[in-house]
Image (tube, rainbow, N blue to C red; front, side):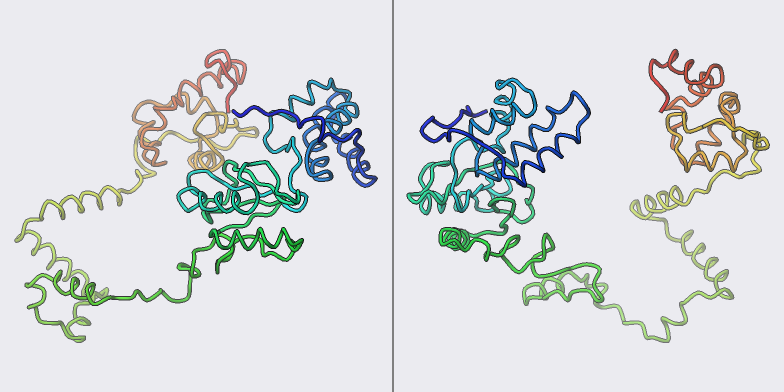
Length: 376
């Protein structure tokens, strides 16, 4: 971490005072914090002082410390710790913060830094000859998708090129910074893709096919497919299954499958389809846990880790309303519920039975005794 010190005495003003409007704002801000906790307002007050003066002076730090009944050293610790506070005079018209973190660096932030060195000053934090401009390199400013970018005041300037940053610097130097467009400096809406949206449009974008791409596509068609005669619309329509023809088509397909073994890939795909298409266990299954009528005050099953509002609703539909019911589940019953909820072993992993036994025995107090923490 870099060493941060206050500016030399020659730059420090003799005193500091908030403007009338800022003084009213500061008093309101301090009152937002509980009695005895007013010192928590130090960061917003220092930020307002910086916005007023351009940087945080020694006099401002001491003034704010007095307002908050703080020791000067405590206020100084805050000012020197956070790099958002400028401890030296900065440009009166613009202080340019260039993001140098990896995304911006990969997109050309080094070129932006070179422009700052040539247009403002060779050294960061040092002002230009007129004292109107200064710059520094900072960490991520949160606009990585539009890298590279800089921050001036409270505004971001994104998708920059060295030439565009040079134009922006010239505008601020001439006192016309308010006329500069903020945000992306290219034809982009905020962080949308360059060139416009590519999804959720009324029609799919038509990809351009080059001669080489078309030739590659043609070569990629297997000879057996290229030689196969094209089916007519009539043939295609005849192959469509209807409720009347579906059984016959199914029998035909089954016979064809017996005659020709599945390839390894097709067999794997079939197994996957069967697994994904597996149905819930039947509600009439003998292993389904017994349900009860909803009591006047059902237990809060959400106290069991792994049970949320939706799962609790499903359990209620199954007639499960109490911790005692869950605690009594045998292995077969747990497997039935696990399969019905498609939990893939969560009931065992989260140990619902042990949790439910503790809650049924003594509520939250017993749960804390057993698990050493409060239920969720």
